[in-house]
Length: 67
Image (tube, rainbow, N blue to C red; front, side):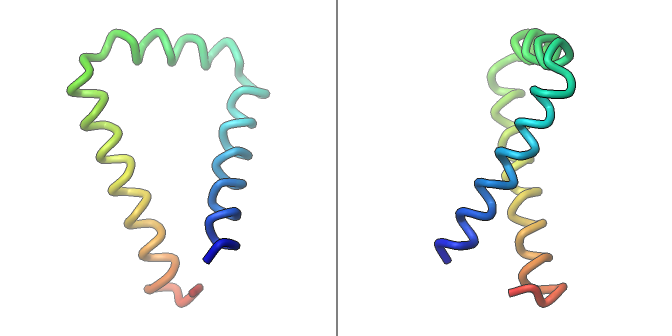
């Protein structure tokens, strides 16, 4: 279990690091655009992202037999 958590955190850090390393100025534009979105909409976007993440993990562990 701890191995899976470490793997997930590591993958998130790799993706986030790539975004910052490859397109730092674009990231500034994205942050500015996010600041213009109402908080309730950002919250809903976050909840949708969490739901999609859970779905991906569920599919990877269950449907594809990786667990």
